[in-house]
Image (tube, rainbow, N blue to C red; front, side, top):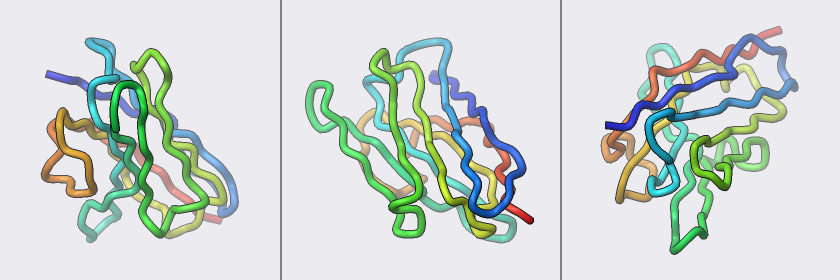
Length: 126
């Protein structure tokens, strides 16, 4: 079992930045493919960004079109944390953000991810 914990959410104004982190204390995340998803009230959970292992320690990142150029996903070398740097935030980015992990799947479908954090609120409002 992989337990994931998100931190870093909050209330910001349009144009501001936030950095979300996802960590596990029980084992390294280096062998998992990771993703960030979000869910706004009344909407389905949607893919935001993912980082998957291509081979060895080489990873590739993927972004939803709505966040491309504004958000950056990364993971630390030790493999215990993953981050989402969010710049130029917009009101439409307001949602609960979830960190997720999967052992084999690389992609955007939330149903294919095995482990989830509890979610953290990000609110962008003036």
